[in-house]
Amino acid sequence: MRVIVTRPEREAQGWVLDLSAAGFDAVALPLIKVGPVADAAGLARAWQRLAEYAGVMFVSGNAVEQFFASKPALAPGFGSQEAMKTRAWAVGPGTARALLRAGVAPNRLDAPPQDAGQFDSETLWQGVSAQVRPGDRVLIVRGGDAAGGADAGAGPGAGPGAGREWFATRVVQAGGRVEFVVAYQRGAPEFSSGARQLAGAAATDGSVWLFSSTQALANLSAWLPGKSWAQARAVATHPRIAAAAKRTGFGEVFETRPTLPDVVATLRRLASAGVRSTDQCCPPTL
Figure 1 (cartoon, rainbow, N blue to C red):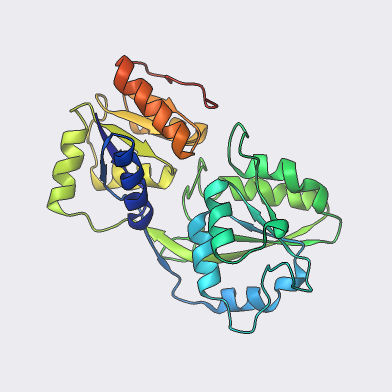
Figure 2 (cartoon, rainbow, N blue to C red):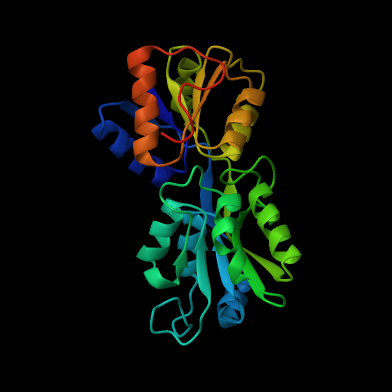
């Protein structure tokens, strides 16, 4: 059973290695391209005002990497010895690991617990809502499209920025103020003839598509308009992504949590049981 990994190139290669080590025939077919923003002025302002925020919410590992790549040499950070008290908030374990690699001290980092039922803005808010007081300012570091707008479905969103817009609304309801900064651009990659051949075969040959973003599904539909996915299978790492896969036309859609052990467990159940279902083979929490 072949697994089609649709994450951006660098992330996809890491997942291919991990899934291959777990015994799967995994192949990368990146459906999203990630790059730096054309105008980094907003990032520079965010770093200058970092100490003014009660918390900085990062929507993904890409947001972390691009935000810290823009860090001025003398700007304060999130180290344990820094005088400022700004917290770093991560939506999930991958984002949290990226923050730790960037030098954020563990005692300055908040993220959903490892045993959380899901990793998203809603779960993060449950853990950090008590930190937001009236008058506090919160920064949300997100991605954008080539035109500078909010990215469409980066991560587990049903539409443009759904999760972070929900999070921003909760902050405002708690009396806080929200600002956004675009740290990276997301778009569709240039697809080769080999990629087109792979996608066409994977629509009918029993391959399993692994989706962690609704934008990947949108790019796939735009790349191959009119393509039938009725015989294709997909594993989605969030209920909203699963719903998007069903709207795209995937005949079978299965849900799992986004951690490697959960994804591997779901794929093994599919491979060993030959599961055929239009809903899901495994509960979101395994």
